[in-house]
Amino acid sequence: MLKALEVMVAEEGDPILRSVLEQMLHGVENGSAISDALAHVVPAMSRSVIELVRSAEKTGAWDEILLEIAEGLEEGTFGGAM
Image (cartoon, rainbow, N blue to C red):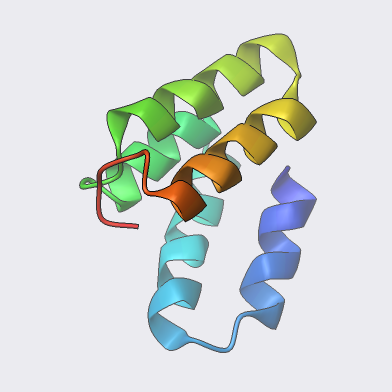
């Protein structure tokens, strides 16, 4: 996941999103869980999304959970800033 964040930071063209990704990357590099880094950087993020990320951290089921998050965001199922 650390490598994925590094690649996203390097490739992101939007300066605001790049800043968010950089903050998440620094949090993870300093020992934060991805869910904690996400909650800290995007405080208005839906609790549901953060808890799903936390579940993926515990179970390793990233592919299924990220798909669920993506579908929920597309459908507007999750509240929050993103």
